[in-house]
Length: 141
Length: 141
Image 1 (tube, rainbow over the protein chains, first blue to last red):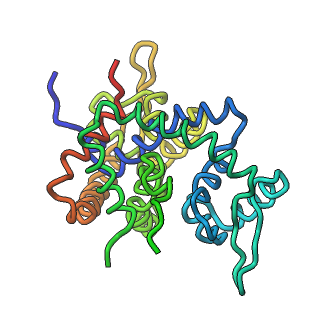
Image 2 (spheres, each protein chain N blue to C red; image 1 turned 120 degrees about the vertical axis):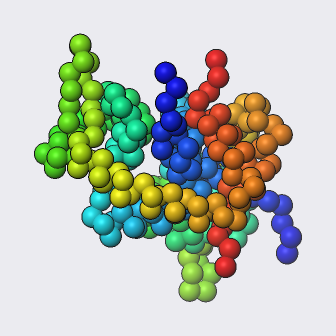
């Protein structure tokens, strides 16, 4: 029954997309239980530790969303008291409010536990994997 | 100016989602030039080399799509002559037509070239990366 390996089974883009989907499923289910939408989590996680905040454009890029969608999301998150806007010269920067920081402080330890469980079987290879993914995320030159 | 690393910069799920997005962007632009929608490419790539074809459910899972969406997509691809349905007992299996195989035969070498360029800077680590991603995609036990 041995057959040649199928293209997709060895194709990086397929493996990345599947791994991202499978790896996220467990944590996204947990977010749903807590009533936190995935895009809200992404914004909160991205803004956590960003002392000067982020522009809407940078947030949209980091969260893999279109800028107009991000603007609407930030309007809702501002109404919910999770983010605030601050003008800096000609830029508007988005920052977490204290409630937003509290939400990040609740969710990030859960995210880290989820990640640790996922990587437990790959503990030795994990730093190399992350370095490689970082290399793909940030193309040189 | 050294500040502690931000959570997202070292978070596996973020790195996977970003790497998948960034790595796919170039090839997806190429598909657009050729007038091939990304979901059509995914179906064609998944069916390539699957001699007995796939069920709609397996295709939906492999292509990260909902089953009703996949059914509609397959209707359009059947009209375009790229796939055919074959009954096998109580199952319906989807297979590439010869035109579908030709499209796969055109696109897969391009996908492999794109992948090779992407991995060129990571040639030594690539097999370990793929093994690790496969481990995430196929959880044990």
